[in-house]
Picture: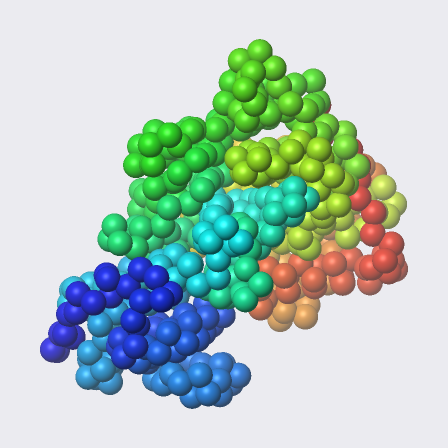
Length: 517
């Protein structure tokens, strides 16, 4: 197969105001991200060909309207139409793994390969702040807690008077935020390991330089995409590269500290630690139930600034230990942009967690039913189980190549029972047999989506006792039986309400759940 013509031109394009006209760009994927890429490049007058396995009707209709072309079909190999197009640049959606045939072909051909983050950074001067500078970027990644921390940070920045946009992997493409005509002071960008892998390919001309960055934690996830845990770790570490002011890391997660130590940052950038312990200078932490900042004040060796209390967080459903950690990480990012402690405190009184994140569905007959469907890997599920000591655990789905044995060994013996769902039930049942043989395990064998959660709730209701929590924290992806983790959580909540006869408006949160003490 002939290789495409390689052009040096893309590396010269480092501004919205550069001449992008006629640049032949292959865009891989036509979801939310892929369309934002195609729309941006079309606006820049590039020659855009979008290739996708399957195009949604709306996006397929819009492509010719914006001036882009579409190739639709199985991408198990490199279509001749793509070779004939001879792209000078390939911009890939995050779903395209390093082993995808088109990605392998592009790299072998020496064609520049970008993700949406690099494109967004190269054109982030489209809309400027009143002082004539582009918006600052704050990057948030980690195996778990990314969305919560991104939203927390943006909320704190807004309370401090800054125009802040949560974007990226959170659902709003970063390119849409960059092109928003209203402009922003700060973009808080949730970045996935997939996006970071592409960002790691950047040449100096396209290298992103955030104001602040954080990797919240690191545990096994997305191993099928990356190929190994080491490759996943290396992708996550890219978040700290070229950071200008604050590299925020989790003192309780050694991997994140090492990432900061090894990062090539802008001279003067500081390492800022956080955890639930007493903070040292340049850290944020907890002292006698008070969240404090000892990093962003001149007298940090002898003083601390109070941000809020664990009790106040618990009153708003934010008292679980892993959520308190997210609050500390977000506070560090906000403080790096000079948000006052009082504004952080005010923001936290208004903030609410996303649906399907330790969301209390109902409390009935002494049993609390909790939807944490967003816990799609063992690390996230472990945090939920730690917050609720007496649980009937609803677990299972698609494990994404991760061994669940360590989680079952650590948390399984302490639960009342497990209700196992999904395509990989056998692996989970085997893990309980090895590591927690005394714990009752019930398998839901229904394959029909409509029946799964009804049977889950029926089983759990028969097992749970006064004071127990029935916890949907699957530690797995949902796409074997459900449309998404949100669909899984919604169906669980509906089944609970049908069972106990409560309306969605009667939800209550347990103010003491997960307090740090």
